[in-house]
Length: 193
Image (tube, rainbow, N blue to C red):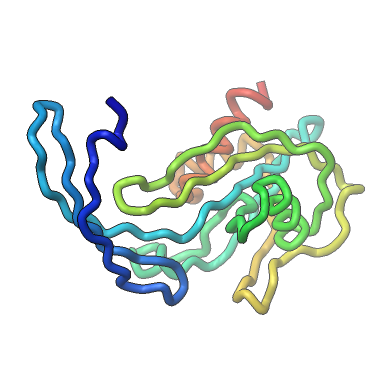
């Protein structure tokens, strides 16, 4: 039996489509014991995204960005978040979009990029799936200063950190973004051995 065999969607109501899509859904779920149970859920659809960790194996460094995130601020985080390069797919393939994000955010035109995994970040209420990438960078790949697109409200600082320093910053609570922690952990386990 698939999940499709176990769900009957009864009503979907659009609550907002201002910036992203927020819906309220009533459905019936067939429990493991065979009984049908009516449930109500709100789902937030910001669109799928891609994230990238550029690394320099020889210099044992990574490129990250630091920027303001309102949602983190209203949840009590009074600092700028340190993150990987990332962005919404905007109807592009993950590979095309993450290359564009790298140029916009960090000012690098990267060579080969490697997709390492996909993950749902908060599947209890958010439909977003992120495609995760890593790519080597060298100083000669820099084509601009980065910083993001001011028209999109981006005000991004580019950070080049030693991998050991970045890992320490996770333990100190200075890097608290999940996608960044995931890619740094991946790099520590699979790249910087």
